[in-house]
Length: 581
Image 1 (cartoon, helix red, strand yellow):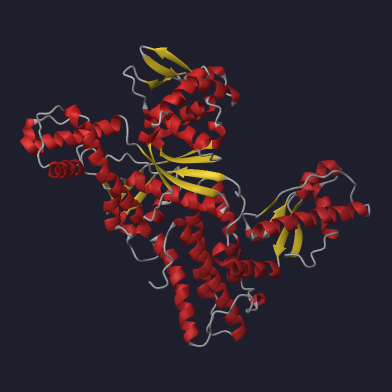
Image 2 (tube, helix red, strand yellow):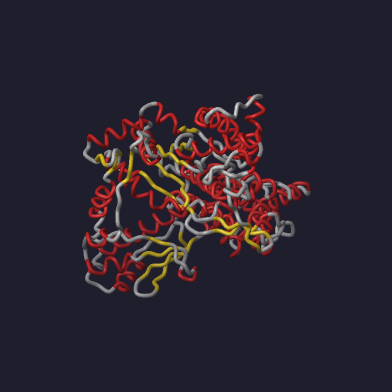
């Protein structure tokens, strides 16, 4: 797909090199092997639209001052038929290029030609990538952290797909282990209390105390009709867990669907245990010499693995010692495998069994200590965890109402769940606000999220789209329809506000690639805010109805090009592009 910013960079670099060859050919500059220099967009538009350091980079090889080289290049540069109207020397030897009408016209033509595909690329074509996100314990309602991880993972998957990758969205269901055991015991305790009285049975100190557990117990008792409470607790654990999961998992799927998230795969931890994959993975680590027995348990030599990885990365031994690295238990003395052992087996399944080239996990920042341990374990299995597993750590969410912090505590049953949030805030607003830069703590302002004015960023962007749709509809009623692609004279778009808007349209393909490269889908939010702002300023400065027909048609075509890109960007975040507001 077309990337006019990159096209201009490539052309500027080619023009500089062609000018050097011409200058060297007639003796104006010496013949030498000169390095290609990058072309960038200057921060200050006063320094041109694109700039290259070619003359500075070639100075040593040519044994001449950069400005003298730049002047020779300028003297031999032919801009005829190029994207550039002029070039000039600045500072110690920069060559600054200024765009001409051809480039602006081709940007609009690309938007019109590619439509919903504008901005997409093949930069990741051939890569099979998994994005695992949310993966909340199915022991209670999803909370704010899950809500943030949900939209970050979903939007990241979308931008990776827009770059040509084959992407799979996955939810890892922790339906085995200690948390599920605690979950089942919590339900059992509530069943006992609801059957024989609150004081009849002590609730586990570490149990889940939310009202949802009471509701699960109530449902279980209704299903059983007769609950023989005298039977030992252990007798009921499997039934309690299975019932709790049978209620909670469909509810999680329903909430996520309401949040506009659909997964390709729901992967169950229990399958790893039942298939023997966890035990097999531990055995492979043992055969490779990375485990040992101690106190009846099987341990992974995590400290040794991480130390070797750190030494390879250039860390000094004395600095590594300060980290106080520790080994991890894979199999407890009672014969049960740990969550870490299951996690290693799970990621082995991702790479070895299902053949993903890259795996990206969206985790809460409190899991940062687990990152190097898991990558190291995969390295020990020969699966290149350090190179192929990427972890995006997201910071906490602070929920505010009327400027006051809304405290969340899943344990006490006072959590604000995803479902509660979506009852109060529109889904599109929630997705927009949670698609913030992952490594920064965010404040979610409930009041701002429902405001219908320009202070609310999602409203500001959606309003720009609706404004264009309303404008087109109104003008069509007056006999001025949006010109079909190629039918407007775009060479008439020479006003500053028009060119700034077109430059912003041109930046969209780069935005998608930056979001994919940096695993930061918030690039899309920032871009859309800038695009909406550019359009609103264009709309104020450049009239349509009052202008001559040819200019009016060109401006209306530009407005519709903006609508296309706004809609494309909102679609990547999973947000609607309303035609009326």
